Length: 111
Length: 112
Image (cartoon, rainbow over all chains, first blue to last red; front, top):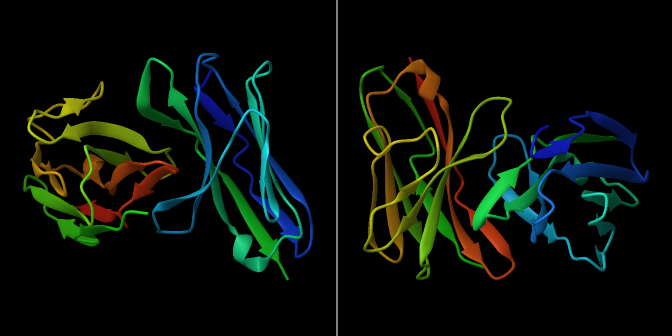
């Protein structure tokens, strides 16, 4: 089983749609969770950290389910500019500064 | 958040040669991280660079192939030595911030 697994997509959605990405991780001792966004040929950029209580930032909502070792990202009212690859990132619990990266989920928002 | 200047942004190199990638941060940071992202692969940590000590390499990466320098708290270099086509990849430096990790813009390396 991969350490961090994501559905690679691509997800093709119309503008205004709501889309959800899921991510599972294998190490139950992991403590830090992030969603990053990577545009084509660019570096990853932090979208949001994921907290146990769940957190929301505008149209983006992240949820963490420790029991199921599952993280989600919900994007409401999709914009064309949301088209990117979304990377799920989890810390390596044995080495808190090391991050384990998912392969990413590709999203294309269409007009 | 910290601003990282990474260069070169891209290069095409002959096999057997070496390329040194530089990252300059606009603030002092204790640790800098070097990643590789091969086509269709997730980001993979190469090594962690601390100022004043030798870098710590991840499994599968060795100092002879990827020597790293960290002369001060704002600068680091990664060298890809004796390159082969398998080294073609994007190389990224990163620093840890309170809110997460910030990346340089990446170096797209093609080895021919």
